[in-house]
Length: 76
Image: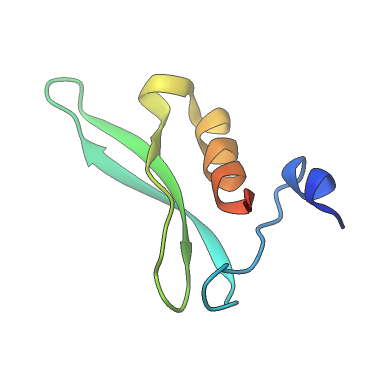
């Protein structure tokens, strides 16, 4: 699978630093008066390097998950 195919899928590339598996995390952040909002990020299962948070409040659940995946899989 090449880079372009991987960007269109839900598959996560291995960690660019240690080569371990990565996982998509859904966590919750307390908002001021609106309650909780889910945040999504990808994190390495070994060295714990991670992407920034992408929250559902701004862009919706599916887009937040995909942005986290895309951010992780982007290699430059």
